Length: 113
Image (tube, rainbow, N blue to C red):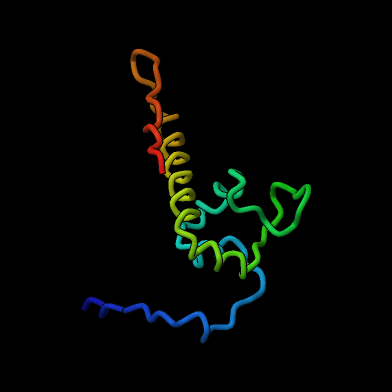
């Protein structure tokens, strides 16, 4: 017998207790992106981690919850972050394909905001 549908209950942020810093999973949940998108945004310089300076490539990165909540309300940031993720996926997916003529397709042109 199929399991009944489960609905997600959204709780206002004022009723939640959030940690002061978030890892990739928490940042993705707050911003509404997937966990694989957060490193892309960090590499693009759009979402720098808390520790300034040199951070090891394989070290755990953290972001300030306060800053993530601000960015989640910034429509311009969300549009730019979404575009960067789309372009990164486009490059990754089309890197595998090499047409017979040897010319790779170019990403879609950016539209002026």
